[in-house]
Length: 412
Image (cartoon, rainbow, N blue to C red; front, top):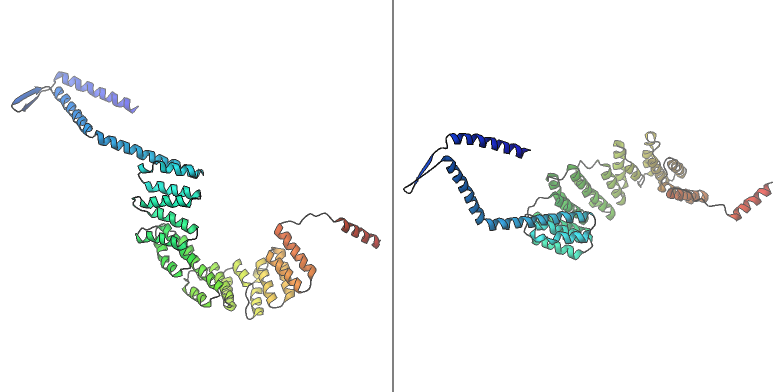
């Protein structure tokens, strides 16, 4: 449509120009080297147009070889781009061997060969070939590129997958030494420091996690919280009171009131034999906000005054009478206070509200020690039924039916 309009306008302008030139064709005189060249304006215009195209042709002839090489290079680059796109589709479809062959077929013609080698390395890894994966990564690192961070990150991920933490850390620190800011590298380093227990390096990394673009505040907060959770758990496993106090002292004030942090600290304190400190922290947390994990941990306390601990737990019952976890906690504390009848009552009420295997097990153990084996066996049977989700439909055994019938005859 547009081409037709342009042709019509050109014809109209040509017709107008022709009418003007027929009336007066114009006159052009050029003196050159003692010669006078005379011609009409139309002839001069045609000569100028012919000269323009002649110059264009000469320039194009001289540049023909370069233009041909450029077009061939563009064609090869386009072929490499298509092979990369096809390999990515094959990789997504699970055709890993085919993808590896496709992506490396035209890698020499690729504009960014490192991308082809990385895809080939991923395809080799998915096939379980560590040797080929390493070979492709080595080629990627040898290829000139603006940044080798993608290849180093992939190498570090594989090392972390095989729990080679030191080698992975060394690989990622190569990126750090090149001053290449990468948010994902910082997160991987934080994970490695957590696994190796290098808390000081983690704390040093914290400001960078918060300042680096690409890392959300929630992710940074979760990473920092996990740092201190791991420290608390490690202190509890080692039963190291000094390490526990050091971790709690270093804790940022923003984390000291988080329920998961307080529960981890309380459990670590219990493991270190400091149940009174754990009781205080859990009680303050539960008075401020109700948390089921904290209530459950409160039942694990072995304080110097179990009766007082039980009374504090029972003080929450009026406002949380239907809380099965709180009833289970009261039952555990009642056992430690040697109030076995109260413990049984709490356990049966807790099971009636929300059955839990821990409650069934505690009730069975309590009944066994009190000498009520039938009730203990019933509790274990109920626990098994709860765990399986249904009771087995076993028909009555013939001998038992015969005994029941004989007992009925004797009664008559």
